[in-house]
Amino acid sequence: MNKTFDEILGSMLEAYQKGEKTLDQIIAEATAEAGFTEEDGKLLDEVNTTLDQIDAKVQSLDEAKAAGHSRAAWLSEEFEKATEGQADEDKIKVLEAVNNALEQRCSELEED
Image (cartoon, rainbow, N blue to C red; front, top):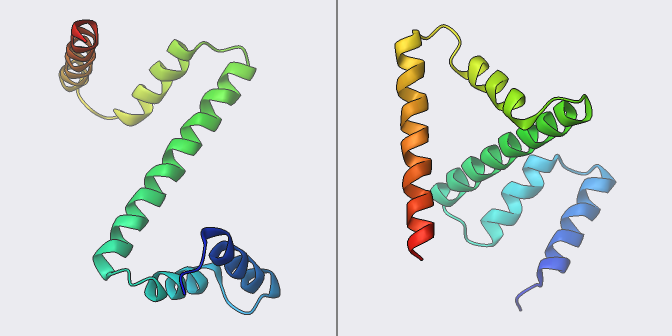
């Protein structure tokens, strides 16, 4: 019998709250039970890492806005952090690539 998402999540939370196993152990068992391959697990880890990174950036932006900073100022600061130590020429190339990609996407959206 297939379990519903709520049933699976409920049993995982129950096991976690009892302190019987670590969260990693619980997830590993659930994914093995569901027939996930090792490759599926790696993909899931990548997705979770990406989601955590996005969440951290959203929180950072919210904090900056609460402190009275604009999105542009926040983005500029994040860009400086990400490109710290790189030559100005390389930074310009990155900005140009981002700008070109954004312009291309805007054009595509206008055509639709």
